[in-house]
Image (cartoon, rainbow, N blue to C red; front, side, top):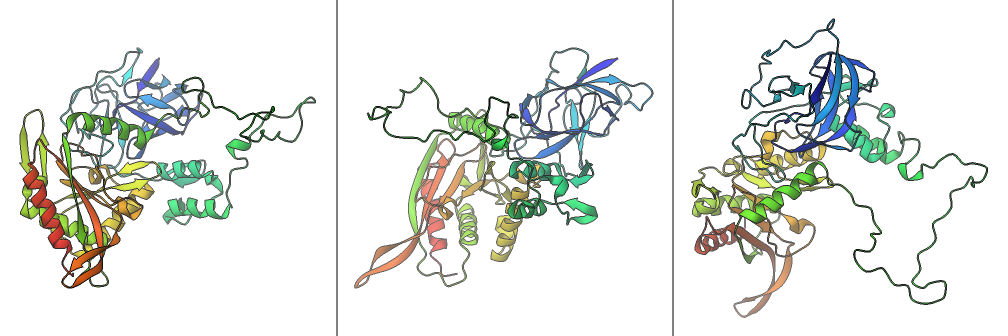
Length: 459
């Protein structure tokens, strides 16, 4: 008997996921709960286990393909002589409705189940039950409170997390040749980066260099592409074609973090009524040793206490507002894969050292793609310190249910009037964007003023 396995909701309420790596091929025999495929969602790379024991008949797509939630992921020929999950068997992991959930995300792994119609003998997608949003993520609206941590999986004799394997493919590293330094011989992110840097485990041929075997009529050396020139062979200026005639580049499908970021940004743009106030924070009085990020966090905490209206969530449909007594700050982290916003929890209880240690930890977890989903949800206000790259003022996007985001630009010196003349003072440009449905202009201005006052202090 053959069964189809539909891609389950991996616990993030996302409409699709991207294939990173299959652990089996068509014709292989797999056991119940053995890892079937590694999938990339908006924030993590997770392993999806097999829901049955049997022979693999079909696999949906290859690495890089996007699979829609509820459509076929794989098809199996059930082997009744091998262990199978009993009909309606309770997996012991319930983080959503009992029916229609498709899969459960436990504290340590995704558990595939035939409960809710995920395994089906038809090609019809399994129905998805509605769930209440439980938090906000830049790049995802989470619909599960599950916590997940990954375990290293041995494939091809190599132990590595799915995220590490994805990094190796991205950097063109043959993971089987990487020297493992992790516990129990596990290959780490740093191992892959080191191998990429010294070229000790480079894949035999880069994708761009792959060519078909030469024939008698083909040269053995690759033919160089014609050089670009501004004039034609007749010596006349070359003209580009008008827009829409032909694209010189190839369309690239958005995947993972960027794909979901595009959806969430469009949704936020449609729902929020943003307004921005800007000013410069004079930090001339700072003594040496001040941490800019730490001072910005402290200033936000001070402003949130003075004007709680911006440290809040807003429900635009029910027209309700929730003011938070604590301050959890979403710190925007820019990566090659897209934007992550981990939450700096209880910022109002941290000193400068605690803020720096927490920010460093979150950044490392983001870069290694090991950050739990719970750390990417539930912040009460956001901070974008884009000034570490360039730029002065900004109008960053607010993602509901938050009502405000602070943006810090690149510091600069400017001439400041003082008693008897002028002085060169260093300033930090600040922008506060707020949802005008939930906050008044006066509240936003007082919030910004409280930040300016705190940042003006020497330490």
